[in-house]
Image 1 (cartoon, rainbow, N blue to C red):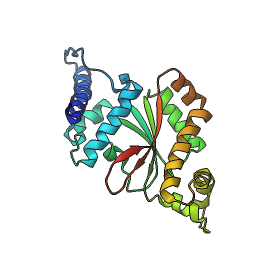
Image 2 (cartoon, rainbow, N blue to C red):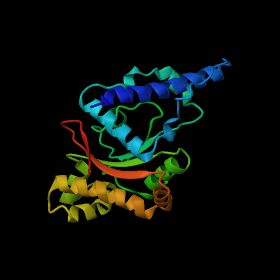
Image 3 (cartoon, rainbow, N blue to C red):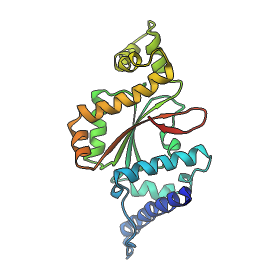
Image 4 (cartoon, rainbow, N blue to C red):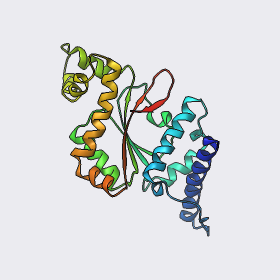
Length: 229
């Protein structure tokens, strides 16, 4: 069975080499790009999802590869443009550092975050931008175990300020959970992904054209693993 880490390193080396080429051209150096180099956005939706999950396996195994990148070159390469291959809608929870969870670095993942990883007009607009302008190939709605927003919505206790605004978005998942927090978290990730597929014409058209895959997943705080839901 092939070593997925080797495949990831090759992919990451190709991306980084592309950054090197870009820096060389910017500096006026005559540099011929090898034919095998390709932009991240040339990945298929299935390959983009595979890359995210392979990165998560590296994270869960404490074998991060993203730190091997030259951050100076990556920053220079992304000053004028970005070409992320994936977008992630995640919870605002500090225990879910998205780039680390998927072993990615500068310019690779377009991330939106809001407590409860729920859809709002602003979140949808941001993700549509990622599809239309940036060319992302996979969009993952990522819930996580022990989510405080879901637990608070299940209790429905009085809270200060505007925190309770989140409850209405989480209520459909709670109603399907049978009172189980973990089930509510899973249902919520799936429901938000389903809403994206149906409520956004941009998302729907991209899926229909075979240019985008939308998935839901749950991050386990204890193991570091992401499971598709």
